[in-house]
Image 1 (cartoon, rainbow, N blue to C red):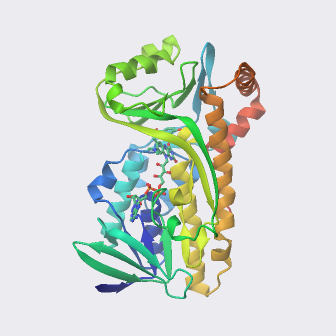
Image 2: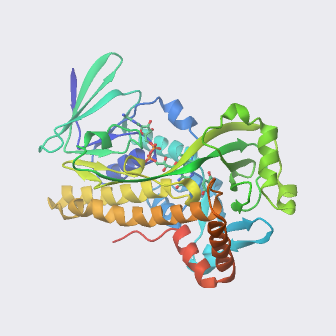
Length: 394
Ligand code: RFL
Ligand code: PHB
């Protein structure tokens, strides 16, 4: 067995783990990232696309803004479209003075790998059978297997950034964790196509189900439709996807959608999930390892970013001063933001999707909610403030 030592062992090389490693490095704190998949696999995943104002500001502040500002597509708002009614804009710029950016998680992950490589950061990919040991002792350690050999990493802290299916949360005794969960009876079928996007990020409600038009670049579009949980990608050749997508938009919107062959197609179930607390001894959870939101509010990646911002700040304070006040407050502070995003994502999911068993009363409630949002500047201001992202706490 080989043995190494670092200050923070980071489990998971997704956006949360890589950004944490980058933030710590800027403050002179050493870390090792252990990622189960190959780098090619991580970089091939297509996920989030919309960045909150706070995420944009943070990425710029820590030297990760150059490509984002060159290639990302700024948005001053998002559009809501409702079957049979006019589309309208939730104008985040007008209500909050802040804008969002369409910039893919894939690109952010590339930028993070490039920054860590340039700084000589240690990222171990294809790290199998990662295990966390002695998390409540003064010196925890982590073991993993690579190329048939077992390796040991001794550390001061472990950051669990390994997503919903990771090992970190599972290393916390069930008696310690409180889990809050809700499933939804549908998923999202998403495609990427090398076609000019519809100009707006547009959320559509239709009696056939939800649809979303989004984008990555002037020649890369991302579209989603609500789908049944038991459907398969094989059942959705491109031609069927486009027909269904357009059937869920108004005629003028459908006419403006440029279709083309898909270059990626995937199905994701929708889920709300929170595990509390986000700490066990010297293990701190961040990102999807601790919480999942349905993608309707575009919050998942942004929460991963705010978690690691808080966690890095707390670790820096601890290493500088020896105090653990910020580390002790990390879980509560992160969870306040998490629950805000959970509520918004749940609410938008309820508002914009068709539920199989809903009663006529529930449909009327939804229509009325839409009418109120359409008519009330106050309701729009509230949504704008949350969509663009609540500020980080000091
Ligand atoms: P990730 O990205 O899942 O990364 C976790 C990493 O840990 C690795 N791993 C392990 N490594 C070592 N040992 C183990 N035992 C391991 N188990 C797992 C995994 O291989 C992986 O590399 O979590 P992280 O870093 O917390 O980042 C979270 C985001 O990825 C996620 O919240 C977003 O993608 C959610 N999301 C969106 N978020 C937004 O903010 N805006 C959006 O517009 C948005 N759209 C979306 C989304 C997620 C989607 N899907 C597919 C779930 C759209 C979709 C369709
Ligand atoms: C995306 O562009 O992938 C995207 C946009 C908005 C969402 C979710 C995903 O709410």
